Length: 571
Ligand SMILES: *Cc1c(COP(=O)(O)O)cnc(C)c1O
Image (cartoon, rainbow, N blue to C red; front, side, top):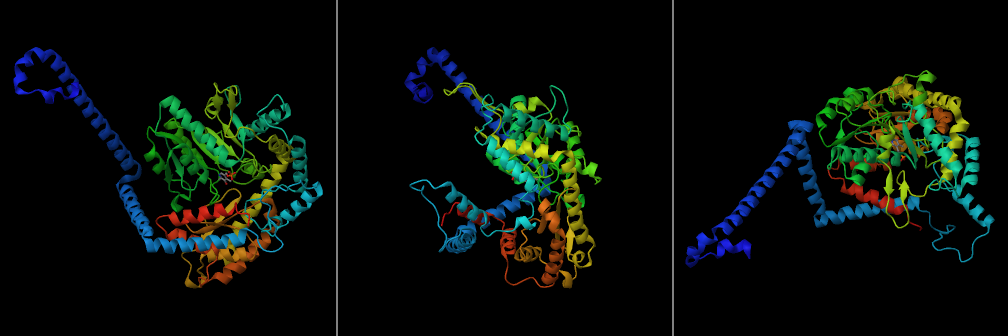
């Protein structure tokens, strides 16, 4: 055993040492080399962690790092506390109870409800299916049709819906994965991308703007992030990618972080910066592992547009991609200027912007399941493609997550864009932004609202968020979640937000018609919630009241997981 020969040398063998010397010294050299290697590895290890520690210090500062460490310790201790048997049992019982309540709300049961959990032995008649479908369509629900739901239903009117249904019918079997079989679908998809590129001022020409259609905003964002990660990997060998997000950026970015193994840095959007992302904090976090900067135009929680010009300056300076999330802004934000509203800079005219996600299924009024992701160059789009050259099933290439895709949805999207046209979108922009302004003006100006509520930042597009006025005298003080719950009781489905506690309205076309009713109800509700935080908590107050106070979000995760399970319950 050569490795142990040094130990095996005993005194009587010493005389032979001289003769053995050349061989031994080679062994010794090897041992020295291994030793040196060990030291180098240790040094690299130390350097690596020193570098990480320094980057952390530079990125978050001494105070931020200590705060982060303290939070993490606090969270871990709390998590341990939750695991104590008696605490755990109590938490389990509470979570189970809450999930059961959810089930009774969401899953209909009892007499008169039939659930189908196996195939009918003989197929139904078409009429039977039709009548069951209309029953399903008319189940008791929150009335989006009367403009009672914030966001969610981006309805473009009955005529457009009928047209979309016709498009579905005609292209029901089509699948763009077979462009030779469905040439019309290929053509429509290319045109949807081209129209969107033009609307967002992508550079023209062969090496200019490019894009693909996807199944929704989340997929568009996932794809833009994947492209940025692959670019950094292939061009700069980045193996531990990091991206820097405004904390208000859509959750799809955090999802991408989990899916694609990218470290996520969340940046404050402080009130002092009008709830836009804090640029100096981003600069401090940029390092050689950074693959992407992100801004929203606007963000979902507060409807605020980040300072895209300032983000662009950073992106250009550090040669980094910059994604602008226009999923929500979609086909409203490009029409702000023409409609005479103040407009921020947000599109490819800002030099550092390299990709933009645009939800045609929001204010493009296309059927759900439609979005586009746009790139400044074809080269960047290449990085999101998937190609398998050696599959036994044949060479395989697909542009995005899905393999087969619904051509019917592409046809529905194309039909919507063509039917709406520039004048159609200009008109909806006027209505939607006008209604948002009206709600905002009411909250800011109306005597009964302005004492109790405060608008968050300066919204420019379709969303307006407000929170409780913390400076209000006792008499006018409200708990914003009580306001949200009281609005729910009046049939309004508005969005509750957290950090800070707030709520928002994302104006859609159905809401435009109901906006006066909404303001009236909001006044009544604020009046009713004043001064006394209600004793019995509604859903929003209960969930966010608890969630906000928890250092470790395990219980919220449990509840949310239970909620998702509930979606697949048949009875
Ligand atoms: C809606 C939205 C998205 C994407 O959501 P999907 O539900 O996947 O379409 C992304 N960003 C913002 C700001 C959004 O409002």
